[in-house]
Image 1: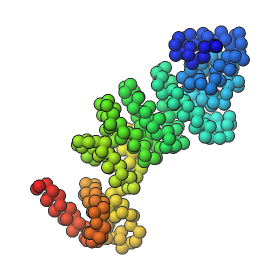
Image 2 (image 1 turned 90 degrees about the horizontal axis):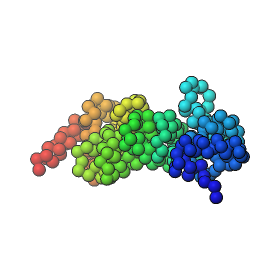
Image 3 (image 1 turned 90 degrees about the vertical axis):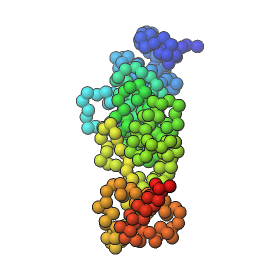
Image 4 (image 1 turned 180 degrees about the vertical axis):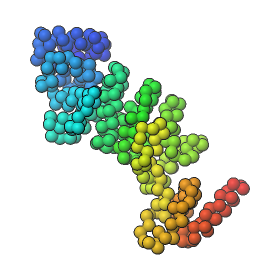
Length: 313
């Protein structure tokens, strides 16, 4: 049985693979194409072979998966981008096929360290998964890549931005689970990504704190549109304190008029009111209804009294 291109790359190296495929093309082009189109071929091997494929004009003979992958690669590495469609839907009319190719590229390619250009292709392919397709099943895959890039000392700004651009609140879960990691570097990076969660750093059980915060605030999380920049401390979500405080948006003018003082409070005061209101609703809706209908000053006074009694214990 002949040795596959995959095995040659992994056991004998890139130079040997390049030499082998060139010799094979000279002696049996049809067999070379069959080997390149092998279903078990990974994206890193296709990336290594892309120069040979281009030099010998073999693209037309490739499988649809390989054609799409090389077209995506070419677009990402192009020095001059055109306003055309970023990948070749003309090859396949089903966008989900493009999705499967992108996932194959990232899934089979995230562990390899070929060069900076290769890393760019993988990161951008992962970004297309989260920004265009926004499939929840891709979140763990891209999260793993994000933590891998951090462990290797590479910039994570683009991947962080594109990961949270999935606009899926559950994107927080794979990050939070890293708080349980046995590797302190992963825990530290998870804390960095979750820096916007108030109180997380001070908690003795950070994962339990994260889960409690997530379950409590999930109904009230909003996308922070102003934070979608390539910054070191991205804050992808903010809590809608007013909705958490009131349990719903104001739907009557009288209700809004009564609560308009809420919007003039400091962020800390809004957060205190929202959290107190949420906890009181959980304990007793009757007492909460009585409290929520009090004037705002009276509500704040009760919070101060409760906090004072707590700290005196």
